[in-house]
Picture 1 (cartoon, rainbow, N blue to C red):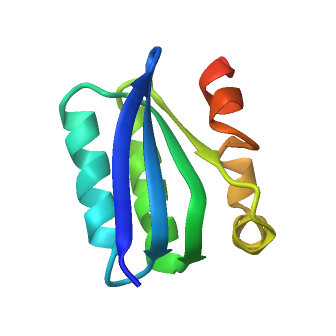
Picture 2 (picture 1 turned 180 degrees about the vertical axis):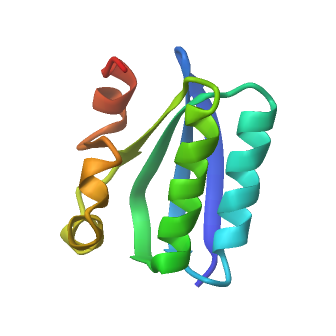
Length: 113
C-alpha cells in the first residue's frame, strides 16, 4: 500500500489529506511534505487522517516532528481522526495529550489555538 498526500488551504490553516499506510517505507514522504509546508510559511496545519489504514511508530515520529516544527514558529498541528484502530495508537502512546484530535476537518479548522 502506498501513501497519498494532498494539501489545500482553508482560512488560516493548511489541510494535509493523508491516505493509505504511514509506515517505515512511506513516512519519509509525509515528513518531506510537512517540512516543505513549514519551510514555505505554513505554520497552522491540519492533518486529515480519515483515509489512513495503518500507522506505525515511524509515522507517529513524523507527526511529532511536524508538531515540533510548527511550534517553533508559534504554530499548531491538529489531527482529524475518527477511526478507532488509529485513535487507539494515540491513546496507548499518550499522544492524545500532545495532539488535538478532531472528528472533522471543519471542527479542526474552526478550533482556536
